[in-house]
Length: 164
Image (cartoon, rainbow, N blue to C red):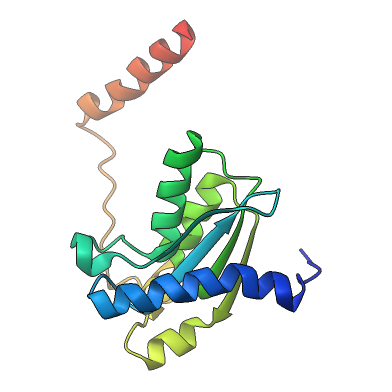
C-alpha cells in the first residue's frame, strides 16, 4: 500500500496531542514513552492517550491498544475501519494485531522499534517469535484430543448465531 503523507500541519495536529498526554502520563508515572491518537474519517480526534501500563498494572496497556479499546467504547462499535492511528512509536506486534482486528488500515508512526529497543523497550523477542526465527520464548502446545468440552463451545456458538 502506498499513501500520500498528510501535511506537516495535519501531522502536528494529530501527533501533538499524543505527545502531550504521553509526557504528562510519564511524569505522573502512568506508563512509558508511547502515545497514540486515533482519528476518524472526518479528521476528528476520537482519542489521544499515552501508555497506561504502570497506572493500570496491565502489560497490555500500550497506547495503541488502549486507543482502540477507548474508541470502541466511545463509538459503540468494534469496527474502526474509518479511523487512522497516529503513534509516537512503531507499534509492537500486539498493537498491530489489535489494529488489524479493529479494521484500522493505516497507522503513521514516528520513532521505530529500534529506537524503543535502544531505550529499554525491545520487542524483538515478539518479532522473532512471530517470524519463526526464535520459538524458544513460548511453547504453544495444541491438544488435539480429549478436550471435547472446549470443542462444544463452537457448537453453542453456531447455535446462538443461527438464532440471530
